[in-house]
Image (tube, rainbow, N blue to C red; front, side):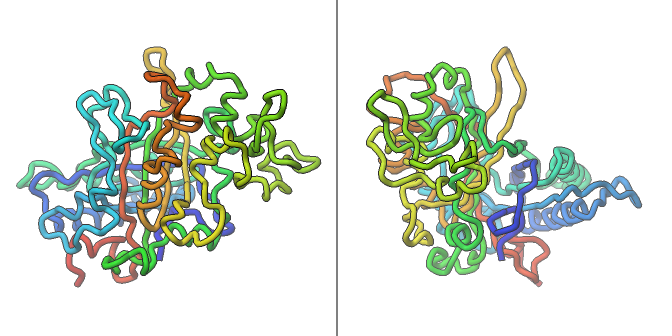
Length: 411
């Protein structure tokens, strides 16, 4: 059974606030030591979901719809005493490259999606990832603080510190206007709720291969993507629309340019009496159309969504279930620090890696458009602050926490 925090089914609405924390195992820590501490962390998280905080006995705090999801990176399987081999989906070919000294290099060979300049370390490559989603900033922030307390209270005498430490965390929120920081509608061509989403995200026998113990789980892909809003705002509206593939105001997908060189949306969109594609009556217009002009075909929504039907359960369809959250970290040195926490779930990392590394998809561009018209050294809309792939194992009734069988023998 899938863990909570993946809002794929009908009637499910994710909380407004997001946080993700990455936990690093100290040198010399064993899988069993990590597992014992994870048991305490998981118990603390379950208490938070019931409004309980260890330092406030007999006091109930707002749980605010908190959900907790636990993932394991490749390093978890290299811990001494690990009980499971590295699964196929976490093999090196499904991992992002490390930033070079000073950053600026591509996250995958040949791509135009590069790390931030000056980045020293990718924080999303630790043994453990914990995702928190809740209704308030306090709910997801408190979860990280309470985990920090657990670690402070569990210093290992032999190591001089706890066997796990929080190496980094990121926060975010979703937007009620269904737009992103570049002002265009975002996330509206996600797969329909229910079975279509489950087909692409849940690990099945045919995608598990020899890793049958992962069936019922999923893989989490996380990319922290700062956006260069100054560069984006310097572009004319038409150029922005051709890069995205949608009308900036209505969100309707484009099909071509008219004789006057203006963008032309899908006929009939938005539906009569409505003003945008997110309003009821426009459901059939949210998926990117197939028959479009070559200039539109190179847009972002066309590049990342090339398989509209057929066997979506096949990883070669490259369809994913995306569940992203924006962020805004303030202004530093006059520079606005904002962007997207890109979060996706898939039954195999082949899907997200295919999107990012295939030439006709995203391999040749930073965001969208015709790669042949981009001059060398042109500003890039997106950079990468952190990127990682994690196995999110299924929930098993006999385990104290998901993935316990990775770290320690079960009684």
